[in-house]
Length: 227
Image 1 (cartoon, rainbow, N blue to C red):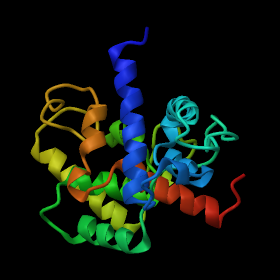
Image 2: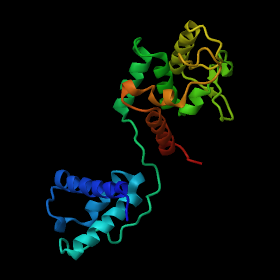
Image 3: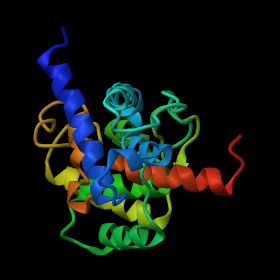
Image 4: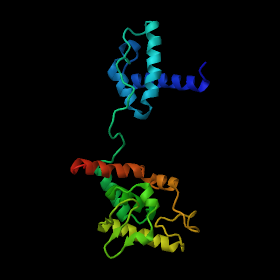
């Protein structure tokens, strides 16, 4: 027999489909559901596609035996996820607003500004930002070395200004931690900031470092030779 958890997940999936059909597709009868409706519903959570499709196939087999539908709308759908990028990106207007926030607003925390600028303009990952050390900064050539990259990354004036502000904030903490981003937890040691800290450092903007970085990478792929 199935566990209570498995049954709850299956019922929740059918409930979500019913709400989607009613609110988004304007359909209140199972017999009106077609394959396009199911495909659109599955695309709302692409990572859960295999599990959700399995549940829906079971449901519509049941619906056919009860003659609620004549044709199974899940027939012919593949469990495999479509390949390619599926993450979120920022519009040009959103990028402009964030750029102004990070470069002109003195109330913005230096860690937020540095994370945002290096992610959005230079495609820096949270790991690269966590491991960024003061001894990898060249203030003569205006470059930084990001962990794992073969060459130094040249910074534009706006990014350099944000980095300088972050270094000033670090200096005020009176820490011997060698990293650029130092938190209250790490200022007495030498370890980098936690992964969770970098994940939530842009929460006040309503985005994540991953979204900002993805925006830059997508732009590079669209404008340059991916190879």
